[in-house]
Amino acid sequence: MSTAHKYARIESERRFLLRSLPADLDLQDAMRMIDRYWLGTRLRLRRMETLDGKVIQLKLTQKYVDPDRPAEETIITNQYLTETEFELFAQLPGPELVKRRCRYLHLGGGYSIDIFEGPLEGLLLAEIEAGQGNLAPGKTPAFAVCEVTAEPAFTGGQLAETDAAQLTGLLTKWLEGG
Image (cartoon, rainbow, N blue to C red; front, side, top):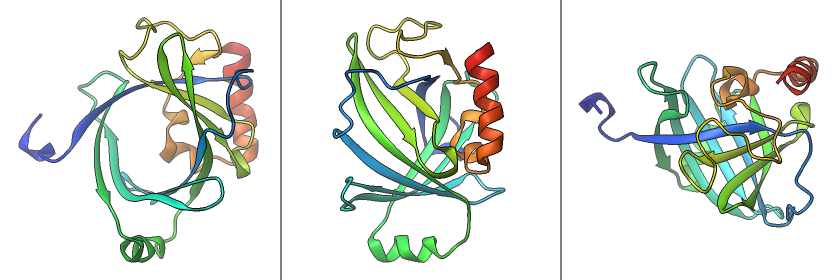
């Protein structure tokens, strides 16, 4: 990694589209994430909280794809914030994503399953750190429909700009043709 990325790290993860939630998913083993994106930037403001609203973590993240790296690798830098710092950044307008994130163990792999709310209600995505668990490269777990790691439409920045009608078209395309 060059000195231009001195404080960044590589995040290596794979994303999968789900048609429905796994039957054995514990919906109470979850947190809510509220992400605000600033259009035209690589920045995201994230509030992580318990399901009853207690703050777990506040952070400012820069995340982007390096075209010279595989699709599952992104460059990420996190800055952890105090409530005062968070409130200052929260004054900047931008589209938001709200999702519930549940932990899910499947065949030795630790997945995060995101259940989107608001205009993206109905979207279900699973993530796993690349190389974690028993999931071979190029394979899709049995509870998922298809892998969408390399599909920009399923990244947070793109999803933040997606309305309900666009989501319907996206899901129709991927769930029927995946």
